[in-house]
Image 1: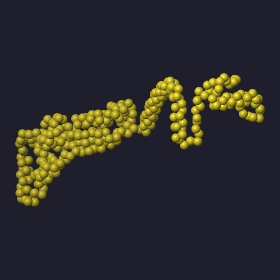
Image 2 (image 1 turned 180 degrees about the vertical axis):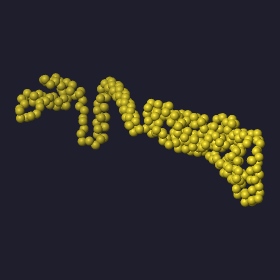
Image 3 (image 1 turned 90 degrees about the vertical axis):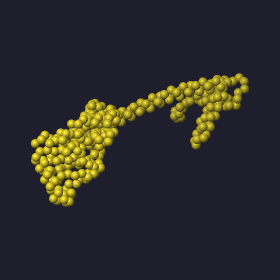
Image 4 (image 1 turned 90 degrees about the horizontal axis):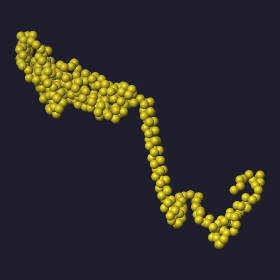
Length: 329
């Protein structure tokens, strides 16, 4: 028997930069030299044609096959690969000696099961990911690996665990795009000999243990409280500086304090309250002497204040009784 036909996987693979080319051009088999057919093979081919002729047109039902636009057919004749991909549309096979496999060229989305991963800083996280891949070389995907789709899915799980295990928790939470890109490159390099092209990898969810979530929430709350205290302290500092400046301005004008009193009364009266605090100007005490008579004429309000002070002094001279139970002023 002649040597087995060499598969087209021996042809050089397209580089990553040629991904924009048509899919048809990517999986076309490399031209091969015609091989000599053995007597047994020629005999079976002749018998197959003889059956087709004597059973015509009923033999067309088993000889004509149809594949969809998104599929390609890999044909084997007497177990040997025919280095030509069939489809899309109608193609012809020899009954009894030809077999074929339909390969789907559409993008497959694979939801990677949740993986419990130990990060580089010894934190256990649960990660979900999605991998999008497709077959770009039907012949290689059939003869290069037993099940290209399942092999790619298993490889995606192991690659996810390997790449995330080399990153810390903060990197996993903040650098998802970089991790996804690294995972895509690793998968693409591993699956290219299988005729598989990885289109995209996305980290869908990262779940932390409940204890770690509480610890991170407490840390974030403490950080926010510290920031709020700093902001409040800065506000107090600015307010005290503004009050000092306002006091300096008011002290330079005699009527400024009185205008401030009136403004305060106006603000209090606008609210619905039963108590009004009236500020008493300290300037009214000017010229009042509590120990004796005053020289010169006093204002009426000054006389009233002086009389009240004398009345308080007279009450201080009266000894307190035990039954009063009050305190002296």
